[in-house]
Every structure is written in structure tokens, then in C-alpha cells.
Image (cartoon, rainbow, N blue to C red):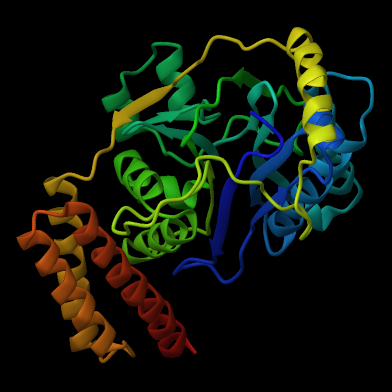
Length: 384
């Protein structure tokens, strides 16, 4: 990757339908200079806290505030060592707080971090929050869930079907806090290609929304739209947990329905300033050659993979979901913008008639967003 490549990113978090507070946290820390980019890259992080009351919320916030900071300030260490050190420092910090205060017992957090470097994508991971990559109509899970059912499958004690039926999915085997010297999984650096999309999320999203649905939305829509659609889809399916998602695309976004053409690579502004003068570009070429010798790409470990095209099956499935929710909204007198919903439903049908499944799915996504927000509002209004 190059310093001046465009990276489009978006994030969204939601309390969900059942929880009273949000114990998820996330952070995006872009390198502020070409030199920082060369040394430490851009950092994206999602954490899902655990503990009673506001303890989990504090744990995830400590992770998202301190891991990028500690990683960036560590000098003279390769990125993989620096991010591991940052994880362990925060794990020790959370463990210390839990040990010193009885109210903080059980305090911990999952944490998944993606670092985009000149060499590629580096991943640090503890827990069951996930990092995915969507590339050319396929979604790959790049992290291993540190959960009881995944561990039993890995050790061949249970088949995947047996584990899914017999083992609770929310039993975590590794997190930041309980063990001050936690083992951190490192993946990469992995090659990054133009138009690659990365998705980080808590299990509040990956639980109710399938991998195929995650890849279809993230791979075919602008990151901001994908985040909206996915969060509200999780809410329409019960929203049993907090929901957090970060989506980033390597390269500019061109709306498929638009004839407008844009350059393949455009300068990405940092802190409102354009980047990449000719001297900086020449210097980065030489620095990049030296850097590539220091940190080589490694073999990929893909734990789960699925094709995720915009298919008639997924369009029909989500259209049926929205029709059922719409019926409930009418019966329960939800506060919905019915004019906007009717317009999107008409556009969906027009797109289907024209054989444009992506445009039909976009209209369904807008309906999901409308109904998901209305469901949240209705539940809040009726529970007070």
C-alpha cells in the first residue's frame, strides 16, 4: 500500500434492542504523516466489554483509548511486537483495576485490531470480535474466535454442527483483563489489493447477521451505507447485544448506478490537509523498499470463507424479513416514515423488474434502516 492511496472508512455502534448501555467501543486512528504511516500505519479497533454495570464499558474504552496510543508511541520495534506489547499493557491495566476494586471484578474485553501498513494488513486479536476481508465477491474471516465452541471444534472434540447445538456461543476463552499476560493472536502482514474491503465487528453483529450478508452489504455498498444497513438488520433480528461495526475500503468508491468516473487513486486528506508532494513520494519509494525488507508478507490463515454475491436468494430473504417487520409496524403503530418506505419499496420492485439485484438490495437496505430505527424508538417508548 502507498501513503497517498484513498481509504474510505465508516463506523457505527448501537446499544441494540435489549441492553440498557453500550459496552462496545471502537476507534479509528489514521497516521498523521507519511513517516508515521511508514512506521505504524493506520489503526482500526473494535472491543466488546464484559462485566456488570458499567465495568464492561470501561474495559472496552480502556482498550480502544490505550492500545492505539501505546502502539504508536513504541519505538524501535516491528509493528507486530509493538501491537502485542500494547495489548499486554492494556490487559495488565484492566487486570489491575479489577484486582483493586471489588466492583470491577469480572472486568474484561475482547479486542480486534487491524493495522494497515505499507507492507499490508496486520491483525491483532483476543476474544470473539472479528476481522473479515471481502475480496472479489468472497468474504474471509481472518481471526479465530477465542470461544468455547471454536476451541472444541479445533481440538476435534465436537463437529461444527454439534458445537453449534450443544455449546453456548458466548463463552469466551480469552480476553483482556482476567489474565495480565494474555496471549495475543497475530495475523499477517497480509497482502492488500485494490478494492479490498475490511470489516471489524463485535459479536452483536456477527451473531444475528450471517457472514454472507456481512460480505454482500460491505462489498457492494459505500462503507457508510453498509454500516447503517448492517446495524439495523441486527436490530430487526432481535438486537440481543450491543452492535458495533467498522468498514473500510482500499480505494475510491464509485457508485455502480452512476456513470461518473473517478481516478483509481486519489490523495487521501489527513486532518484536512492534502498529502503527497513529489519530494515525499520520491522519499517514500526508497523508504518503502527498505521497509519491505524488514517486514515480509506471511501466509494467510483464513478460518471461514463464503461466496457473497448479490444473489436473488439473499434479496428475497431480506425482502421477506422487511415485509414481516412492516406488518408488525402497522399493527403496533410504529412511528415510521411511510412515504419514504413506500418510495423505497417501489424502487425495489422497479429494480427487480430491470434485473438489477444490487439496486433492489440497496432499496431493501434503506427499508431495513427505516424499520430498524423505528423499532428501536418504539421499544424505548413502550418500555418507559
